[in-house]
Image (tube, rainbow, N blue to C red; front, side):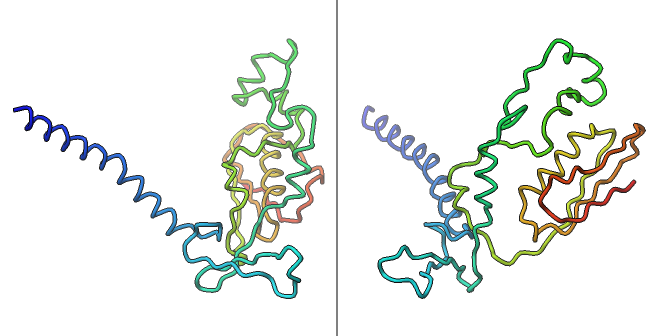
Length: 209
């Protein structure tokens, strides 16, 4: 009887181990197969050293997919460095220290957040990079189509809406943005504002009803 119980327990343990390990093995295989960025471990990617560099110099690596398409690091490292050095109200995603006068219910009723505080935070606010560290080495196709970005809004706080536009412009490769379209979804609150020109991108911005 004890031998049967022991075999039954072994069988149950094997089934449980299979249920735990096999899905992880499958997910890892799927990750390797679908990793298109040329990072180490990616399937179907080739790395070749750039020509013309001496053996004593650090060679620049060029990444290709299996079909010969070139990969590119789209990160703007200089912009990332500048963002990391910014200080001020709300910079780096830090909370804004409010005074008693700024803690008014009206500011929350109209927008669902304190619009008075939002107006005091820069439109080009910096944010910390909360992605996984491996995201910094991701590479994607060098040739990509551009796109139109459509942002619908209804009675939106104007500073938060403009901050969204600035964030898109400042954190996206300019050649990939065809236009940004702001669609006013029947707002009944009058707004009037213009862009302050602090964005460094030259993309078309359209405002329509």
